[in-house]
Image (cartoon, rainbow, N blue to C red):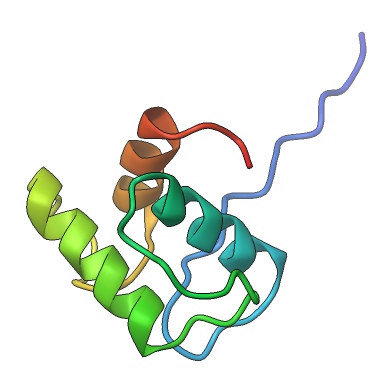
Length: 83
């Protein structure tokens, strides 16, 4: 019998976070024209506002406003393509 590795849950992202996950978020929000800034991998105020607007427009209330959590990620990934 072969053991399968379970994938680690995707990180919750919020203002102040940095890295490739944030860059992917920026690119996905850009596909929907919700984020027009640089895809620099920094979760700043403009990204937070874009996430909040996305959550509001889709009726997502399971995550804190402006925080890219599990519910917001699931919706956005279903609606956009892998950058």
